[in-house]
Image (cartoon, rainbow, N blue to C red; front, side, top):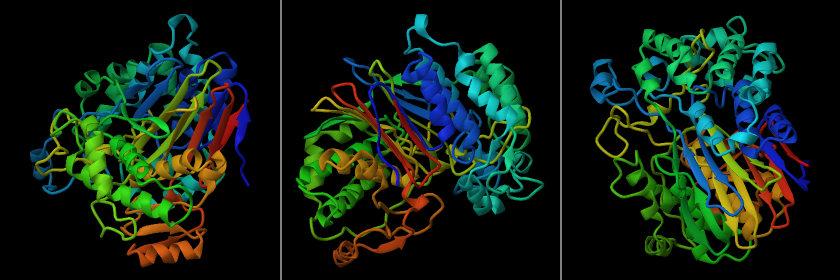
Length: 528
């Protein structure tokens, strides 16, 4: 049984222990939470390749004591050659393929997000980039022991990935699924990290890595070119925000579904539920999720094309109206269109009080599958989230697709700062709501709030049904009450990957820290 990790100085939580250890070691060497997160991001890209990588995107929320939180967005933009006509000419007039070269159509933004995040650290105290990349280089060069999760995911997705260019050479063992514990060496990836160490993070976009990645991608049908990489820049933003009775809540700007995560909690706050874990709690959050997802599916896309800014969707009058539509006893008929996605979330807090909420992804498990042998970089398939039909999420050159990714952060009225988040596509806002309400609204222990049974409305992580999925550890009486209210309930395994992999860090007003991680993942929560 996992317990909350407590400390007096700093904390780190990650879905793989080696990433958490990399972050801890950087902070113990005098680095900030931001630098620790870069080290962990590089490490987890190496040791958890089925869920993320440096061929994907990343998003940050950074809260420094006494300062307004900062968001860093690195949603990759579509290639200049990526148009609906291009896909129609290649035999895909209705939908973008989810695997292969045509699925690799957006620039990977993660590395540039690291660069921009490091600019938040004073130059005179910044650790050398080589220090931050050391663990990732060692893991890629010397090899890692494949996790049970990676082995299981490889087996589940083998049919659609085995023939994708570069995938088998990098992630299979003699054409077969590697067993848990098997060694995975990624020497080309190690050389890419060394190149970044010696030439700076921007060299990923305007140096040898970009030329190698785009040449391989182009040869295998991708519209990406070196010029797309060269013009890409991550952006520093003001995060979305909403006030509730607990404090100020923050999340990521469009094109992520951050506003939906904030909306769920704001709507639930308006219901005035007093106790956790019963019908009012679960039903209330599920119905708030439906209202948020309906609005999200109608409005969300590249912020340059949305009918109104995402922050406007969190206007108090709109929230009051949506909360009034929630029937406290009866379920709204479902489904609506669901959004898939696979991801890692990590959190950090340093001794100075800086708190980081971070998320990094390649979209589907193993992304597009296209893996460049020259760099070891596997390209994401985030562009498969574009629509080919008119609307705010329609594909066009330079546009950013709908993103499931959304790291969360809260500055509570009692002085606590909480960073929390999870992987799980459609489940990300739902799990965030479960963890936040359990810990903050109803006072549950932080680790207990993550370990407790969870629910998922709709599709995610390779699942095809749109039911309300409940882990089998829920009280049978609650399950029956939800069914009686009209929810289409489906029971899933007691610690199911479908429920996502969550984590959280809380810094108290007195400087004490707590960290928790998910027993559903290969995770670790460290505090000292």
